[in-house]
Amino acid sequence: MASFAGNCNQKLLLLLSSQLVVAAFMFGNTCKTIFEAIVFVFVMHPFDVGDRCVVDGVQLLVEEMNILTTVFLKLDNEKVYYPNSVLATKPISNYYRSPDMGDTIEFSIDFLTPAKTIGRLKEEIKKHLEANTLWHRNHLVVVKEIENVNAF
Image (cartoon, one colour):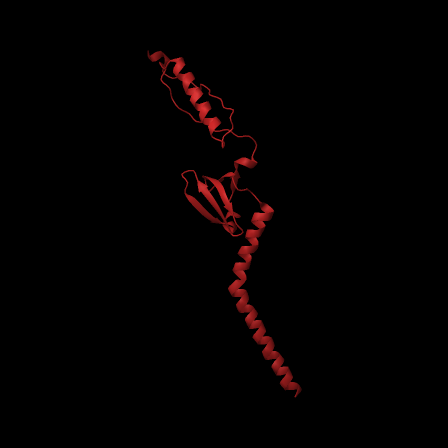
């Protein structure tokens, strides 16, 4: 009778361990992905909704954060969905968590352009920046260089 009970225990142990191996095989990667995503969202927390970030060299606006995915909005309003487990492996630049930064836009103006027209251009730039809440109101228009001055 003792050998029968020992045999049953071995069979039960074998059945349970094989079921555990199957469950680990089926759900192991899912559990790993969920754990990585939770660590990314709640521990690393590299951005918040509304932040402007750079991921893979593309400027994106964080639109929605979920446990498993983050939804970004490109500047042309295209939505991009990233799994958080993938984002955890990528370098992310966050403009809103960085110190004050600046953007430079270079453009050329003809040497013969009247000062009044340049002044009007500066005012239009100022109006645009004040109307757009994503940019700081303070701006600076700087003459970088004057080319072909002697051509006339």
